[in-house]
Length: 101
Image 1 (cartoon, rainbow, N blue to C red):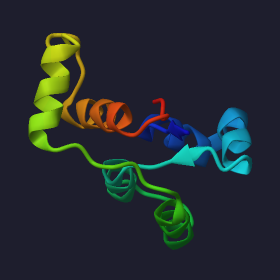
Image 2: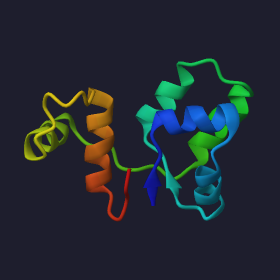
Image 3: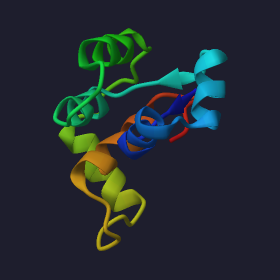
Image 4: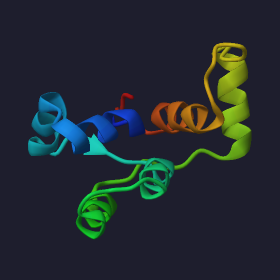
């Protein structure tokens, strides 16, 4: 399973992303509530349909704040330009086997 980052979804919704289409067709995509939230904050064409489709995808387990902080420390993510939401996605990926980001 693949947890697709917000930036990939944005590219896909603008111009199409063949690799994402392939993953979607094979039912290999999972989503995180933070990705849905980030996309919902933007201007989406076909907003209701897109958000509904995203809500219908399988969801990864959300990491707790403590798990995210542990992930940051264990993987030495500090000072690398990784934001809090990306750290949450990385921790959720680690907790949801076999998922990759």
